[in-house]
Length: 129
Image 1 (cartoon, rainbow, N blue to C red):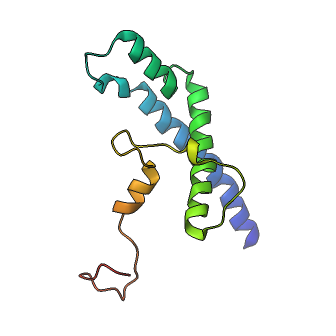
Image 2 (tube, rainbow, N blue to C red; image 1 turned 45 degrees about the vertical axis):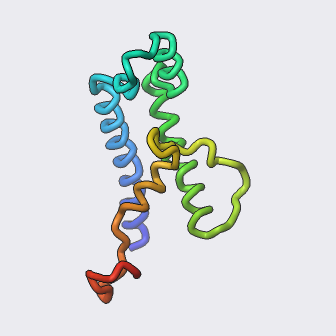
Image 3 (tube, rainbow, N blue to C red; image 1 turned 90 degrees about the vertical axis):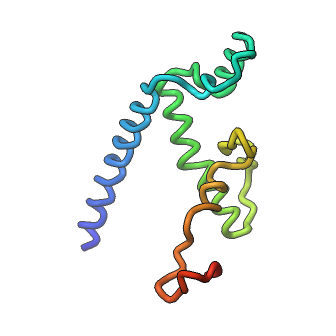
């Protein structure tokens, strides 16, 4: 049984990496970028500076490597710190992805609006778990 689980895990990890690579590639190939929504009054130099600061001018593999590092290292690190209250070494809060509107971490915004699994005993009308 343990050999079966190990074999399944060893095939699941590369499969998930390939799927994430394909989805990232499709999103990268989509027309437009975040700077397309900026006001037209901004100069071209400002737009190019914003593109450079967001890393949109980086090669595809560099952007994918940065995303993997963000997804598998920085965000879990922040999640562990917020759930356990333990300060892990290093300051990774500066590397979290921030919302343009609220300037707060995107994963925190998603967690705030996501439903919380309270279990089957929770009343549908109660807000507390």
